[in-house]
Structures are given as C-alpha cells and as structure tokens.
Image (cartoon, rainbow, N blue to C red; front, top):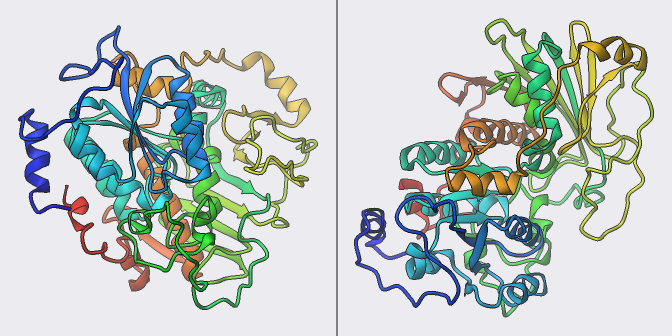
Length: 472
C-alpha cells in the first residue's frame, strides 16, 4: 500500500477530487453524496465472488435494489469465479480490492465482503473508512480484536453494516423476538447448540505437526493477496476453495460457520453479550493447526438484570450428540439447511439446531430461519392459546441491508449486534486451539488466566504492508 493511503482516505471522505477515476459503466447511475434515493439502486461492489460469494451476489441482485458495479477476487481466472463474471459482464473487474477502491471509490455505495474469514477485516475497514455500507459474511472476522476494531469503526464512520446470518431476517428472528417480549421465553438457564454433520477436516491425521508441503500456485491466483494480513504460508490446495475453514490460521471452524445461524437469536434477545468462562469440556483429536474431530464447549454467561445466568454448550463432531429432552420427537431433515457444496445429502443423526431450557418450558429449534417448537406435544397444545401473533418479515436479509443503505429500514444484524456474537465464536475457537479453560473479564475484555490466550485475542502482528488497516 502506498505511503499516502491515509491521505487518500481522508480526501475521499471529504469529497476531494485528488484521485483519477475511470469512466462510468454504461447503464449505471452513480448515487449522489449520501445514501441513494428512493428511486436509485444501490451501487454494489463485490469482494469474493465464488462459492458463497456468488450466492450472496445473486441474492442481493435479485432483490432488484442494486447494481453490480464491480467484481473483485484474488483468483479472477478460476472456474468458481467465472459464473459471476459471465453473469455481470459490464461490471468492472479487479483482483485487488485496494485497486478497486483507488479506481472507483466514488462509484460505490456499498460493498459485499464474502472472502475467507481471515481476510474480512482489511476489506471491511477500508470500505467503512471510505463511507461505504458493508455486508460481511459470518463470522465478522477471525480474531477478537479485529471484531472489536470493526465495531468501533462502524460507529466512527456511521455506516450501515450487516453480517450474513440470514436467519436474522426470517421467521426464527421474529418468533424469538415476539415470544421473548410476550414472556413465553423467559428465565432461560441453559442452551445446547449442535452441528454434527461431517466437516472437511474430519478424518485428517491429527498427529500432523507442520503445514502440508506447498503446491504450485495456480497461474490465475494472487496468493499474496489471498493471504492478506495473515502469516505467509506456502500455497496448498487444502487452503483454498472452502478448505480454508479447516485451519486456525484462516477460519473459525464449525463454530464460526454454523454458530451464527444457530445461536444468533438466543444471543441477541437474551442479551447474553460475552461469556465469563469458556470451557472445552471435550476436545477429540486435538491439533494445533486444524480443528478437532469433535468438541464440546461450555460458554458461561452471568446474570443480566432480571435474567438468570445461562450456559450455552456447543457440540460438533459426527457422534458428539447432546442428550435430548423427553418428548423431543424425531429428527427429520430440516428444509432450511443449505445442501453441501457438492450437492450430496448427508445421513443425519441430529439436525443442526438448539434446545433452550427455561424454568417452565423447553424449546427446540433448528438453524437459519427455522422456528422454535415447544417440547413436548402436550405442553405445546397447552401453550397454544397463549402464544402471541408473530409478524411476517418485511424483507429478506439482503433486501433489508440494501433498504437500510437507502434509509428505508434498519439493518437487523449490524456490527453492534453481530460483533459480540462473533467474539463469542473467537473465544470458543481459542479454547479449542489451546484446549484449556479460559476465564474472561467481560469489562476489560481480557483473558485473565492464560497469558498466551490473552495475546491471541489480538493474534500475530499483521504482515508488512497490511499494518495500516489496523489503524483506520
């Protein structure tokens, strides 16, 4: 990055014309200063355009509320990025988000960030510093401190933010909110949350002590840009195309991937905040480089006002299934669960989901937009007449974000909400990686019983050339 980057950011934020901007794309109307008007579409730039990024792009585009003005990916010649380039042939193309903002910052209203977890931070921070709204895939970032800086920056730059936990705009969100406000869900003391489907790293050699020997770098891939601020590693095929989620260097494992779709509404409407203790009750197949074959992690939250202390116990691993309450019923394939990337349907022992234990009632729920049910059938019938009406969602998660950019709605999963949830995941991952119980000071936001873990809240220093993003 150039030495005058901060001056560039300052000038752009003030609307100064100190930057050469390429010609406007034919057919796209740039918004005026401020948010787009009622009849304007949001000019959207997309960073990370393959796999999940492609799904997000199409979902945003299909709302009819945005123009796709730029596509950016560190591998613009890969098979998984071709689809979006063919879909939007008039969009500008970049393999470096820094160049994208250099060339067309004043043509962009909002940015989708759907890169691997470890590289969310620099793209998001630069976009927000330029006054751009951001939709960031879950979890927000890889480290606790990166999420903290992102929350602070969102407030400082006063931009619209949204995390990609899509269930936060579906029936699960509105039901949990209505049932909590009506006192149906109250006095919750324990939650079990589980994701027991096979993961990419299951079956790997857990005695591995070094990263795999490097492979030739694909000619189309900017490997340096892909690694971003993380420690440089030799390229390997098991680091890219979704495999990055296997490694502590790059992702947050099953917890970061699925926790945002399972725990999100309980975390929000029970006002859980950050835990005071994170206990890895079970770590099967521990390895310092990649995630366990199975883990059980207890997150302990203190009393909050009139709400009692509450534990969330997370289970992952194929055979690591929690005890279920009497009257739970049969586990059937949840239609809300997206199919695996290879399209194969996995046999299930228990759907991803949660059980919520309160003083008087037990609730069972799934993932994403799946609604809660009351356990058991007899108790559900008894409570039927007492349940409040649940409003319909006025917009899906993507439309909600774009309408928030236009000033028509309020984003439902802004960083002030999704940030602490993401930090819960980062704390859980530290407990997995170190295989040690952690005591966390919620006020000081420090781990007080393990010096190494406390240092890992921040993580390793960013690579040379990437430090500036941590100062925005």
